[in-house]
Structure formats: structure tokens, C-alpha cells
Amino acid sequence: MTVQLEDVTVHFGRTCALEGLNLTVAAGETVALLGPSGSGKSTALKAVAGFVRPSRGRIRIAGVDVTDVPPAKRGIGVVVQQYALFPHLRVADNVAFGLRAARRPKAEVTRRVAEMLDMVGMSTYARRFPRELSGGQQQRVAIARALAIRPPVLLLDDPLAALDAQLRADMLDELQKLRREVPDVAIVYVTHDQAEALALADRIAVMRAARLVDIAPSADLYAAPPSAFTASFLGGANLLPVEVSADEVRVAGHPLAGVRAKEGNNLLCIRPHAVRLGSGGLPARLLAAQWRGASSRLTCAIDGLPDVRVHIDVPAGGPLPEVGAQVSMVLPPEACSLVPAGTR
Amino acid sequence: MFAIVLAVLVLAPFVVVGAAAFSGSWNGVFPSDPTTSHLRDALSGDELASLTVSLQTALLGGLLAVVFGTWAALASRTASAPLVRFTDALYHLPIAVPSVVVGLGLLVAFSRPPLLLNGTKWIVVIAHLVLMVAFTYGTVAAALQRTDDAYADVAASLGASPARVLWQVRLPMLRPAIVSAASLSVALSMGEVGATIMVYPASWRTLPVSVFALTDRGQTFVAAAESLVLLAVTVVLVVTLDRLRGRAVER
Image (cartoon, rainbow over all chains, first blue to last red; front, top):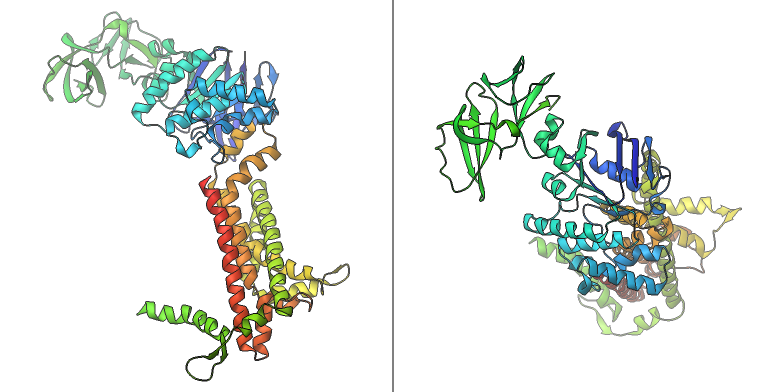
């Protein structure tokens, strides 16, 4: 276990920013902390970095309790949201900062800086100042600077949030490549974007209102979300109220063959791309259709459930029903699961 | 219309001082008997000494004000809120209080052992320091408020000691504000009269005080010449310091 958080709680004044977080990240593993703003994900990262002090709980790195150790002695690589490149230092001096703080020999500093800049593809910019770089370039330098000190742990605080959509997609590729360059580093990746979390993380920790909601391998969390919040936050699943009687699950009075009933107050969870239009399904009305290039997103309301919006993603190219038309909605049982309603 | 009023009020005194500095007599509407003797007087003997005294006071007082102001601004980041409010008020007090009162206060406070500074140049330097520190503190504190703590946090996470964070990250990033503060306090110090006139010893008479004394004795032309010197030196100092800041911003 490289990083271990045990019941970590952080208060800012009277507000509780993080409540009893338990989390372990193994060497070589990427864990994404995913949640809306104010969910405590950045606070958790700051606690690991040592920038904020937990009011309760312990943090261990490689088995050593670092809860009371200042950030300078933790040896963790940190990339903050706006990169925080030192504006008065050239790119190479930014990358060399940690090595010089550790008083490494000059030759080693030069070699290591060249190696890191090469890794992030910024060798030709070594003599530039940060403000002469684009957002994506600054981001690469920030990563090179953090990794130069060979940290066992790398913390990334929403590193793509400041970039525009196209650049974000490119940087996501770069980050995937980078992951392979540092196979032993434990990475904690804070993000509010579920696509980034799915693309990069081995496991995803979904957070909400200062608490950890669910944590599981990304594929499991997506395929079988343990809670309604996770189902909708990760992948925007449809959540439909169901009636359960005996062994039968029904939506708006229509039985769903093949869906197993469960105890408790549950919702039916199904991804927008799994819903199909075809004969023999639930009668519904098409309210809106949005063309999104490769697919179209349809918004429907099932007859009898006028307040619930159901999203359907259908591949582009096929004929679409008119808005306002009556459609038949098929919910394939293998794509349906029941999740505890909880508090959405 | 307003521009004309402004020109008369702001520019006219400068023009008149400049003209008076070079005239032998001024009995009609325009000055007459052009001469450079006043300027020569202003740059010799006692009057030249006044200039070097002013320069030393401004540079020393300004430097100390920058050091104390920056120090206070940095310290106020981590201090408790009530303490910060108190120091804030304390530092700004010299702005609100008339400078003559500040001078009198210093005179009374430092005229008796163990702190007998009256009669030395240090009481003048301290008076200037007290008056300027409000401006340097304000300038640096405002700049500090605009800088993100993330820079210091990241530097620390890279293994930098608090001293290294201060000298290699915080202070270089504050450099433009520090240079601004320095040039402001030097300029104000070069022109300070109110407090200086209360505390200055005969051996340490600043240029503005000399101007005041000369005018008081009716030597208006020499006073005008000396004002011109004061003006020129201050402009050169401020422009030089501004250049420094320009370079800091560029980097």
C-alpha cells in the first residue's frame, strides 16, 4: 500500500470539508476521486500532500505515518489546478526546482531535467518563461516538475479543467502515455469529469458532500453502480421508479421479464445507450431529439410516469421518430440493474 | 476649461519655480537678470550637504521601510485575524495622523535615555521610516493577497525548506510590488517636511527643510534653485527604480 488514508477528516473553521475518508492506493495504481465541486475531493488531495491538516485520522505513505510531516518531507509530486509554475523561473529551472532543493549534484540536475522535458515533449522550450507557454504546455511542465524528484506518489488536482475541449482530449492521451512511463507511481487523480476518470483510473472513488459514496474498479462501478448517485454521476444513467411484487419488477405497470427483484427501496438503472426503440416495449412519448454527431440523444417520458425523463442514445443514421410522436421503448433486461434509491 | 484651471494650478508653480531659479531679480511681471548663480549656490557648501543628507535619509529610510513593510506583510499571512487587524491599523496610523504630530511624538519619546536619539541623524531616519512603512506595507500586502498560496504549497511539496520558499518563490514573485513600494517611499521621503522639521538636528538638515528655511529667511531665489535640484534628483531616483520594476515585470 503506497498511500493509505484512515478515517481522514478535515474541517475548515466549522465547515466539514472531508468526513472520515478511508482509501488506499497501491503502487502503480491510478485512483480517481470523482465528484461535483464541494464534494471534498480536492481537500482529500491536499490532505495527502500535507497542504491541509486533518482534524482526525491518519495518512500513511509507504507504511510511514506522515500525518504530522510537513509537505517538504513527504516527497510527493503535486500538480495543482492552475499549474502554479514559478513565473520568474525558466521552464528548465522550474523542473530543476525540487532537485536543487534536495541539493543534487549539478550534473545530475542537468541530466534529470533534460530527461523529464524529453518525456513530456518540452525539450525545445527549456529556456522559455511560463507565460510564453500555452495552457497545455504549462501543464506538461508542471507534470515534469512534479515527477523530477522521482516521487512514489503523484497527485493531480483536476489538471485538465483549465483547458478547452480539443486540448483536453489530446492531454488525456498524453496522460495515458505518461502512466506507462512511470509504472510504479501511485497516482491520485482528482476530477469532476467522469470521462477523464473512466479513461485514466483503475479504480474510481465517487465523492459527494465531503464523503466517499462508492469506490470500485472503474468497469464494475460503471456496469453495476452500487448507488443511485453513482449511477447518475458516472455515465448519466436513467433511474426509473419501479414497483416490486413477489418476484416481478414493473415499470409504470408493465412487467419487465428477466429483471430480478431485490429487497428495499430501489430504482431501475439503465444507461442511455442501452435503451432501444422497437416494438413490444413501454409506450412513451418523444419530447426532444438532439443530434450529437455520432449519435442522437432522445428525451422521452414513459406513459404513466410524466415526471421522469428518460434519455436514449441512438446511433446516428437511422430514421428518427418525430418529436411528439408515440414510441415504444425496449429495456433489455441484461442492461438493467436495481440500485438503492438512497438520497439522490 | 477644467484643463486650463488644472494647468494654472499644477503647472504654473513649477514654471515659476524654474524661472525664479535662474533670475537675478523679479520686480515686474516677468523675471529679469538671468543668472545661474543661485543654482551654483544651491549646489555648494551647506546646501549640497543638504542634498546628500536627503539622499541618504531617503535611501536608508526607504530601504528600512521596504524591509519592515514586506516583513510585516509576509507575517500577517499567518498571524491570527485580530492581531492582523491591530497591526494593520497600527501601520496605517501614520497616514491618518498629521506628520507634525508624528514628529512631535518621536521627539518626546526619544529625547531621554535609554533611547536618546534626539540630536542624531537616526531620529530623522526613524521619522521617515515610520511615515513610509504604511505605504510599503500596503503595497506589498495587496500584492501578496493577489498571489495564490498554491505557489508556496507546490514549492514545499518539491522539498523546499520554508527559507527556500521565501527567498526563491515568495520574494521573487513579489519583486514588482517591492520595487514599487521602494520608489514610492523614496519619492515621499525626498519631499517630507512636516515630521522632519520637528526632529532634525543642525547636522542633519534635509533638502526640503533647507528650502523652507531659505524661504523663511527671504532668500526665495536660492530656495527656488534648490527646489529645482530636489525635483530633478527625485525624478531621476524614481525613474531609475521604475526601470528596475520594468525589468522585474518583464522577467
